[in-house]
Amino acid sequence: MALRKTTKAALGISAMALSFVAATSGVASAGPHDNNGASVSGVAGISPNEGCTPGYFCIYTGANYTGTMFRMYHCVEYHLNNWNGVGSWINDNTGGAHALIQDRNYNTLVDTDPDNNWYNGNYNFAPAWHVKAC
Image 1 (cartoon, rainbow, N blue to C red):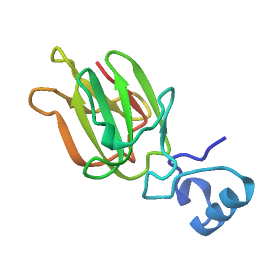
Image 2: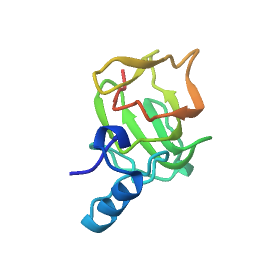
Image 3: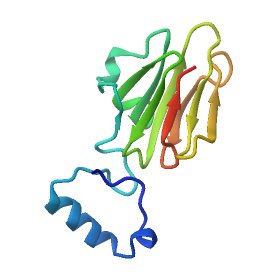
Image 4: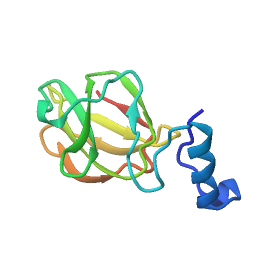
């Protein structure tokens, strides 16, 4: 089971101990402030050189559309794993479809509009747990 979005206070142990446990148990997890090892359930990560094509909402593990890109298709709900730091996103949905970035309780953090609010090159994904690409 991957560790996700935990804090020292919630665990009651030091960050060093947490790192040691993750490193020695074979569990892959992102660092406390990065998106290393980040994934999206049901979506393969690809090179950002492939571009975010029309009809998709794309998120990137790095700022300014770098790192690994995940394309999410219109009107599907996705679950984010190990997104703990700054990345970026582009809403290239067609037909004016919005995309929602949501927290662990499905509260909307960002409502993207492909015509007006369609990109962010420096977004902190730490509170994000879900994306609804429609």
